[in-house]
Image (tube, rainbow, N blue to C red):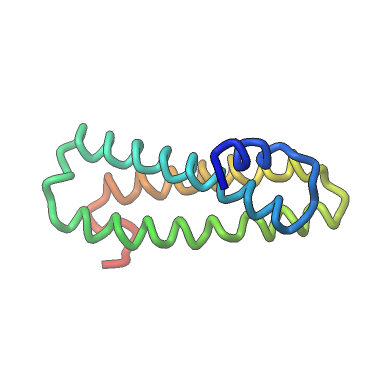
Length: 118
């Protein structure tokens, strides 16, 4: 499966489970890229990257973020069943989840206890 397949699946009108899965996996690349860049940029800018406890907070947070990402395709399916446009639902869910997760990344960077998962 090439990048062109993932790219074309992001905005397709194909409602098959395979098309939805491929679309969300393509979005996962963007999702993780944004979160990695944001977290590292903030960690380096505020000099917390050298603290070992920072990394102990980041790794569980990254795992949790990716588990939460898996809810996106299910939420898209339910919204589509209720009559929502699938592509609009996908975009809304993706941007909402990315925004929430970005806020969680800020908490991990700026608070010593992170999200309380120590």
